Structures are given as C-alpha cells and as structure tokens.
Length: 437
Ligand code: UGA
Image (tube, rainbow, N blue to C red; front, side, top):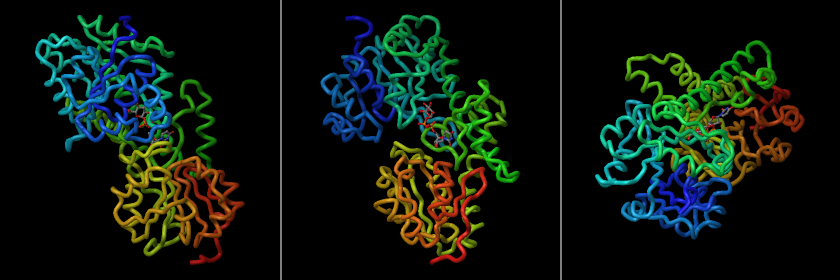
C-alpha cells in the first residue's frame, strides 16, 4: 500500500471530523470515522450530513463507498493506523479547555497500540507533552485545523498551510501525516508539538484581535466622522497589515474564536502570565454586540413595546451554527429593554429556535420586516443583498435599518426609503418625520 493511500481513521465526527473524513475520502483514501452518537452515525451512513456546510453532502455521497461511519472503536482501530482526533474541547467553567473527550480517546487505545495519534482538536499548548508522558510508546503528532465554517471543504482542499508538529522519535509518524497532505497545495510547516499547538491558538487569537481592533477603530470613526470601510481599505493596502479580517461589525462569534481566545488567556494565566491584550479583545467583543441597542435607542427612544426584526441569526453566513452567535446576546438585550423580537435566518432558524426564548421566527425576511419599527442585519447572508428593499420599506412600521455587518449599500437603502446606520460610518437617509406605527 502506498503511503498516500493509507486508510485514515477519524475520531469524533463534528464539523472538523466530518470535513476531514469526507475530504480524505475525496483524495482517494479509505476512511473509518467513529462517533459515540449512534443517531449521527446512522444519518451519515445514509449520506445525510448533520451540519450545513456548502459542498459537503455532495462530496460525502460521491465518496460514500470509501467511508465507514461507526460507533465501534475496535472496528476503527483494526482498520486504521493513523487516527485523527477531532473531538470537541469546549470551555469549562474556569475558561480552560475541557480535555475529557480527548482523554477518553487516549484511554480507549490498547496499551500495545501501534496507532499514531494525530491531534486535530484544539488543545492547550502542553497537551501533547502530557499525553506523551502518560503514553510514552504512542506516536503523537499535532496537526491543528484552520478550516473556516462555510468554506471548510474549500479550505481543506486548498489550505494556506498545513502544520505538523512532532517531537523527537515521532518523525516517521509525522512523515506519514505529511504524506496524507502531500497532494494538496499550500505550504507544510514541520515543528515540535508545543509550537504547533501554539500556532493554532495564536492564529485564532490574532484574528480575533484584528476584529476587535477594527471594531474599536469603527467606534472612533463614528466620533470623528470617518468611514471605517475606507480606513480598513487604506490600512489593508499595507502588506504588513493585510486587508482580511478588518471588517467591522457587531463582533466575532462561533465555536472557535470566543473559546480559543479565552483558553489562551487562561493557559497563560495558569502559568502565571497575565495576557492583558486578550482581556481587551474579549471585552471589546462583548460590548460591540450591545452597541446596536444604543443605536436603535437614538432613533426610537425607549425600545419598550417596539418590534425589532433581526435579519440573520447564525454566527456568520453559510452555516447554521449558532454557537456564541452575536444574535443571542442581541436578542436577549433587546428583550431586556422591553422590545418584541422577530427574526429570520435562511438556515439557522430551527437551531436558533431552540436557543432563543420568546423570539418569533418568521418564514422570510419580508415577513420578519412586516410592521417592524426597525431591523438589524446580524448575519450577512447573500439573500439580504438581493432583497427588494423598497418593498421592505413599505412593509415596515418605520424603515430603519442598523446594518451590523456593513453589508448593504447605504445609498441603495437610502434610495429605497430607509434610514440606514452602519458600524463606524455616517448614517444615511432622512429620518422619517413620523413613525407609521
Ligand atoms: C475560525 C478561523 O478563521 C479558522 O481559521 C479556524 O480554523 C476556526 O476558527 C477554528 O478554530 O476551528 P470560523 O469560526 O469558522 O473560523 O469563522 P471565521 O470566518 O473566522 O469568523 C469568525 C467570526 O468573526 C464570525 O462571527 C465573523 O462574523 C467574525 N468576523 C470575521 C468579523 O467580525 N470581521 C471580520 O473581518 C472577519
């Protein structure tokens, strides 16, 4: 068997695990993927993905004969030597990453195991060392993932970089992992385990810092009459800064940034180091989600009894993931001010409905806007750019829109009859002389 065609084992078939399993199958590998949830395994075996990720379900079906989904660890261990650990590492009450699922996987490996443990789960730096200490004979490779939800398949197939960390004695294991990624473009960086673990945490923390930074710049832009879009464009032309992740808005969310920034802060704290910058990054992000409420109050006065429509609920477009979505905080804050909240999301409504108390779910954007005193664009779904905003204006009690992602064209919205407020830019459109409601 050639190294490139070695079977691949995947443990934990969440977002990362499923994308990893399906993409390795697409590259021609036999894949055995194990999850403890029987329902999930059953639906995946039927070719139905449990998450909304563009391109994934088609790829799964195309490669179905190469992938086995199972709940049985012995089956996985018998068929695959290379084991990608993709279980989740949620935050504990202390803010540290919960490694119990990772530990459970290690405990399931027999003492004389000849497998290679490849850590894709995001773990604190030092985890690899501690696992190697506990299981000295077990080859251990850190291979952090950098996939973005919504473009995960494309990111896997065309990575910016692949990071492979291994310590002395595990070079052959690291070579085997490198061989799996060999057909893909992008640079492969070989490091020690602790550095690979830090690359992952530092990358997410840096991106989150960029977002909080541009959000603070946006807030200052509002004070001095500048436009944060222009400012970000000008900054981004400097190669040292780069233009990505400078989109101001109502803060970052998702299953990764909030958790990983906190985990890095706690990791540093546990060693006695006070990571001051990350405290600010976290606090700015918390406050940013709430700024929209102030903007609405400037226009509407008290929000008591006002009907506010949220357009988009997922933490970003092209996903139904609601984890740490800004919409959750926003909806609760609006309700706290006495507003009536109605919401629409093209794919996340069902998941959101389980999390949002007393929020009315609409079947379309126009339905959500019907009779609303104001709308907030929370998630930049493409369909909102294509909405008939003139029609929307006539349906609303007051055509007021706060664009929490600076996604829509202010001039077009003003033309459609809207009072438009973005983040970090001058408001557009004439205030309505009187509310229709
Ligand atoms: C993030 C990283 O981008 C991935 O590289 C990493 O692999 C992943 O976390 C992970 O650790 O698993 P993801 O959470 O899918 O990926 O989402 P991003 O596209 O990075 O967006 C995160 C949040 O930041 C979203 O709420 C988005 O709306 C917000 N964001 C992003 C901004 O507010 N402004 C920006 O300029 C960019």
